[in-house]
Each structure stands twice: as structure tokens, then as C-alpha cells.
Amino acid sequence: MSFWQSLTRPIIGMAPMDGVTDATFRHTVAMHGKPDVSFTEFTHVHDVCRGPEFLLDSLIYHEAERPIVAQLYGKEPDLFYQAAHAVCELGFDGLDINMGCPSRSVASSGSGAGLIRTPEVAQSIMQAARQGIADWAAGQTLEKAGLKPGRVAAIWQMNEQRQDARPLVRHTIPLSVKTRLGYDVVVIDRWIEHLLIEQPAVISLHGRTLQQMYRGEADWNAIARAAEIVRGSGTLLFGNGDVHSFHDVVRRVRDTGVDGVLVGRAALGAPWFFRQKEEARRILQEHRTEKGPEPWAPPLDVRFEMLLDHARRFEAACGQGQFRRMRKHLGWYCKGFPHAASLRANMFRVSSVADLEQVLANFRMHCASLTEVSDQMLLEPLASPEPSPAL
Ligand SMILES: Cc1cc2nc3c(=O)[nH]c(=O)nc-3n(C[C@H](O)[C@H](O)[C@H](O)COP(=O)(O)O)c2cc1C
Image 1: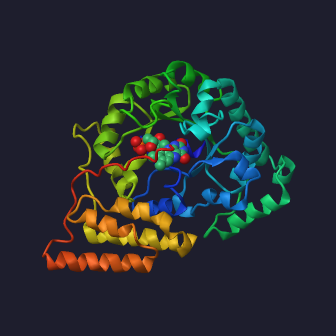
Image 2: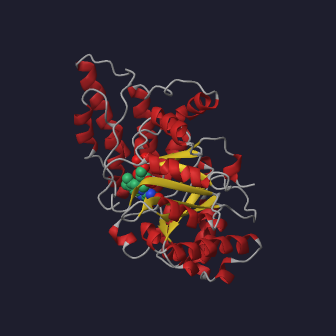
């Protein structure tokens, strides 16, 4: 039985977001409101097998994140075969293939959502990845699969550096796919039927076509149709797109019958987001009529502690030299409270945890001088940040 089957439904997971859901963010989320499952940012199969070593950083994870699924993209079946060995050797719980990225640099080369136009290539990739997993489980070494000794050593080193890494046991891991409704038009019946030939454990469906990018609204009627097609096949269907709150989670599961939901942008700057998953599940399982748990955010002081926790983790893992990459996250934490905009502006200037502590101390002093309540409950639903134009 795969780990997917052992999760209680509906499964509420965090969607992969390149440049955002890195190891430090996912670890922070795991500590403050764990989703049922997380995915790495997508990594190109070529980078896994042959690219510069630093590109393996996107496959770093912490044990606290389990179950954690590695997401790969590309278009060459042979590289998927090799990369599947690396994913297994790194101890991931599952392997997900990206068939949904709309970015021009990815899709126009035939990877990501480009695969929707070449279903036979998509199928070959799934077969190759599955064969890679099976051969690794049967004892095949990474060198035998075609990886160079230096790359194998780098992978072993990643395992050694992972705190509390559990002993590696050779077993097969499930294969899943994350995709969209179509390339330029919705082709959901044909596309889902095609994917089902390879019996992936899960199909996660973002309710937009490639051409829509992130425009308009996710089409949950099309997701409901996909759930209907998949029912009884043994594959799980997850819906994804524009889920902003647990009201949305409850409504979408109720209305569409999906087995799970992936939440992306709503979790940015809100590592506590998934805390309400059990309450939402209870409402659904007990067929209660309420809309879902009320949107909630922690008091401001607690929010700042989480932000600091995230920033400390980032600085420890990536060093001060990279701290600029943390600024966007800091900005996302600053919304929905008095003077959030001015705090956010200051966040874009910090270069270290020490700077950040100073900015927060100044903010607290400023609020105290204005006699504002700093630990008010924040009840308004959080707005989603805009996706980067490239994705
Ligand atoms: C900045 C950004 C990066 C993304 N990177 C990935 C990725 O690496 N792999 C993937 O499958 N989807 C990626 N996506 C798509 C999301 O997983 C998700 O499908 C999309 O954001 C819709 O869900 P949401 O409305 O809950 O955010 C990305 C989205 C954003 C905004």
C-alpha cells in the first residue's frame, strides 16, 4: 500500500511553488501547521543527473516534512529513469512528474504543460520513471543506472547531512502527476483517460489551461468532471487552484468529490494555514452543514515569532549572503494588520536576521507609541500574492 492510501481523505496538501516552497519554508510550515503532504519545487531531470551540484539543493528536505514528494520535470524518458533512482536514494516518499508548468522556457521545449500536447511522450516518461523506481527497489545501484560516481557521492552526502535521516530501505515509491486542464483548450476527458493508462497514484489538477497561465478563475467544474472520470480507477484526483481558505477547501471537496486539494499561494506568509485541516475534515466527514472553519490567523506576536523562526532557518541553511531571497517571504507575512504596508517596505531592506529583529523591535515600539493592540486576532482572509510572471 502506498503512503497516499494511508492518508485520511480528503487529503489537504501544499502545492509545489518554484522559488517559494523551498526546504526552509516547507520545514517552517511543517512546524507550525503541517499539511498532509508536501512537494519539492520542480527540478529538471537533467539537473538531477548531470547539472551543477548546487542545483540538487531543491531536493533538500527535512524529516519533519514527511510525507514529502520530489517533483521533477523534463521530457527525456532516459533521464527520468536515472533521476528516479536519485529520488529513491534520497529517501523521498513519492515522485511527482510536472506536466503543468506553463512557463515559456519549460513548456515550449516540450516539458511541463508542453507534455499535454505529446501524450505519448508523457506516457513514456511515466513508464521510464516507474521502471527506474522498480529497478532501484530491486537493488540496482545508481552507477548501474548511469549516474556518475561524483553525483552518487553528492546524493549520499545529502542523506548524511539530513538531520535524523531514517535508514534507507529499498522499496517502490508511488508515482504521481501534476497537470492542467489542457494546453490551449480544455481537453480533460481525453487527457485524464490517457494518464490513467499508466495508473498514477495521484493526478493533481490545476483548473486552468496552459494558455490561461494564472488568469481568470480555476475551473472547478472541469475538476469535478475529472474526479468523475477517475472514480473507481484506483488513482486519486486532487483539485488545485484559487483555494484561499478552509471555506474554499470544504466547498470544493463537497461540490466536486475530489480526493484531495492542493493549496499554493494561500500558504505564503501563512505557515499556520494548514492547522485547520482536521476541523475541515471533521465537518466533511460528519456531513455537517457549516461552511468550514472560520478564517483564522495567529496573534501578531505569534506571527512575528513564526516569521523569525522561518528567517533563522533560512539564514542557517543558506547563509547571510543569500538573505535577499528571504525578503519576498517577509513581505508576505505583512498583511492584514495596521501599518503592515510600512513594515513590509522595511522588510525589503533587511539583509540578515539581526536586521529583521531590529525592524520588528522598531515596529513594536512604533505601535506601542500609538497605543495600538499588537496581539489582536487577525480574522480577515489573507489575499494571495501574485504568481511570478514566469510561472
Ligand atoms: C511562484 C509559483 C511557482 C510555482 N512552481 C510550481 C512548481 O514548481 N511545480 C508545480 O507543479 N507547480 C508550480 N506552481 C503552480 C502551483 O503549484 C499551483 O498549481 C498554482 O499556484 C495554483 O494553486 P493556488 O491557486 O493554490 O496557488 C507554481 C505557482 C507559483 C505561483
